[in-house]
Length: 345
Image 1 (cartoon, one colour):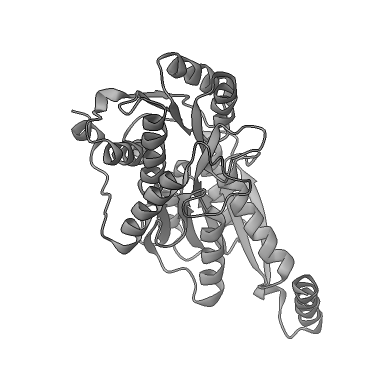
Image 2 (cartoon, rainbow, N blue to C red; image 1 turned 45 degrees about the vertical axis):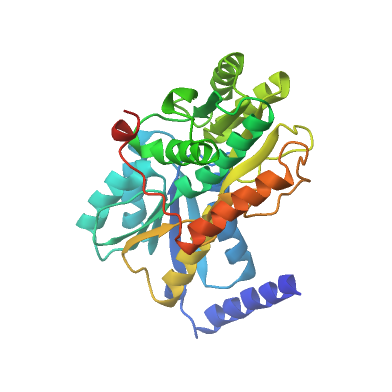
């Protein structure tokens, strides 16, 4: 029924265009500017949401997916989208913050501007950011309890992440705090973090994960986007447990991936579309976490697409993590990310 309703809406809008009741100018053009999409769920969710809304005919909208092959392409593509008359410029990724700031300052009335995953400090831009530390805290609880069940309550605990630095510390901070909530005797010295410095370099992720496994890690947190597949391969080979990122990565072919730190960028894309067509984009900063249903953990806040590995991710672990999730949502537990240099002293 929904499919046919969407088709009827599309036909109706088309008839309005032909009849002149709605002019071609009423069809809003949206530019989605982002890294090469590939199979990165952080990006595919955004593109899929636009495709879904377009197919349903909910709004008179045309959109273009504009991929940035290198750093210089961000500025070129953002500026070209304004010059080509796009009504909404949606930038996905921190790389676009500076060029978006420049263009939105120069052409404040030429388009409406939104960025996902970082703050663009500009009065003409709406920024959507996430609270990944909240979901990472749940992953940390799982890691701490799984390691304890395996006879290693003090770890070591591994992490193969994309990038070092304060910008990605949210993931490490939440993960570490979650583990420490399970065992307060765990110190910063019990953690091993390595970095792929890439979102796609699976071979490097695998090699780093193998090194951490050799050092005795029972659980290795994977946080390098598509490169996580290298960590998954290492988990299957060496028997340690791991977690995915952004979209449920559990698999019946790899029971060592026991959960995922999910981030629903598709939900955010839907929010942006609705606001654009209802009130217009209202500039400012919106921070989204567990309470908004935008981040979470598979089997804790979200149902998994596959059966849970109950031998490892036990009912006791799930209950403990869900209790923490409720505390975060209610505001009883607040995770404010400190400076990494202060936390790691």
